Length: 262
Image (tube, rainbow, N blue to C red):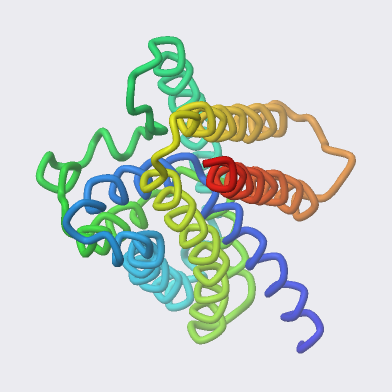
């Protein structure tokens, strides 16, 4: 059981990393970081951690419910997964379309756009308090619109028992919090940088988010239509998260080079 749960833990942590790299997460954290930067310059660096904290409350609640009523849900597991996958595909293509339109328009202060962020109440969408990230993260946790989240719940469902389901949810959230926190640290760095060349670096970051959305959407669509990938989903998740981490590192390195030049 220990070895089997160890493999589940690694898989779920990778799914959490990928979930944190969801373009809607990146867009929401970007927006919150920018909004709170002027009034709360220090705390805004950790918007991603606060967002992940709110999201974690909802994920653990759902995982507990799955563990308690797992037998009833198991009969509809395939249908729930199919619905979640198609919602994810539509959402990701919409996010990519928004960002492509924004890149073509070239606004002066571009930031990634997300579908869920646009649906938030105006007070939350334009909140300047870093603590607004907690309820926003909580609301985002209600969705079953990413394949990584649905897959984590499926593993919680099949692992057995409420305690194990909550443990699976906690590991998933640990991976998610890692990516979310890295994102807010990166956005804080970009927004506080004063170099004239920083707009080019910001645009590269938005392009990376857009490409990620398209890549995940195309991969999920191909699977939904019957294509069997030659490598496991875990390897795909690791590749996508690894690519995003490379962009993180490149972006931070670019700002440091600009600092040295100035």
